[in-house]
Image (cartoon, rainbow, N blue to C red; front, side):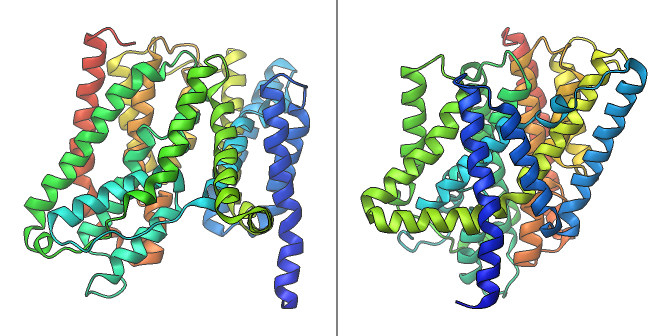
Length: 441
């Protein structure tokens, strides 16, 4: 082993341990077994402090901006009231840090096996569906995995063609409507009190089905010639065994223990199921090696997501502090389908200017914390805004990865996604007003 590698491992190991301890302590506090929230908060911010210099400039910029804005709101509230709960500012998104740490363990057991070689619409649709289901638990790693495979099957070098680009962005972004192992649903559960996912899911799944239909129809209309010979990357059903097991286990535990907080169930299942999976398949020795490597090498790589979520929470807490002090009033009155539609549009539009979509959800949820009388409608609005920002904003993590890794030009991204974004915004608005007409608040 080289000296450089040894140094990297010794540097990474403590920060990975910090996140594991944060996960365990937050879980303990959420289950009300002990008051460990302060310790967990201190550890996760220590992780951010140690890892901050290893963020790229593009990753540091939004974190610094969010922290600066949160600090400004906090100082304003302190100046006017003489009181400031610093701990309350720092621990706003601690449960999401727990979730992100837990979900990273799913990567230990995710593997994809290619199915039969097909061409045309069948190959495109199968790859889109496989990408969608696999990304529901594999997160950003699915972009690299499927992107590398579909690029190999093309004849235009490193750049993805429009069909491959669309199936990656939309397959991934549509998964946020239903997968509890991505960040959106936990964020909604954390920030929107009163949301009932049982009432949200039917409408969310209708949006997913519509998004798939739009993508398939668009492929026939805009890329008929390329579609005829398109060779994607269909995967075997066995590749989806772990995602299915994770979802089934989560639903079963929720059914058996309905009073257990959903974030606790997700954060426990995301760690326990993959560990048991590789333990049964690989044995104790290899499992131990994989876990050690994950803690020392992979967990520190979650620094961009962890930093961004905690910084967004810091800003949201600062805004809520000013609202509680009477310094800021909500931009809207009580929520409705119209308000939800406007918020959905604003999240998408502002994210296209470079503000991270999750930070925008945190800001709007904070501003409207006392005015949200239609939590299920707002949940759909937040999901739609985030999903379209992921696929349509040039500043989203999805498009940054694809631009850097697969050389897709920014102009091509805008051209491929703008019609889809407009259609989906119109459909999302129709869904929100239909929900209101049916009494789904």
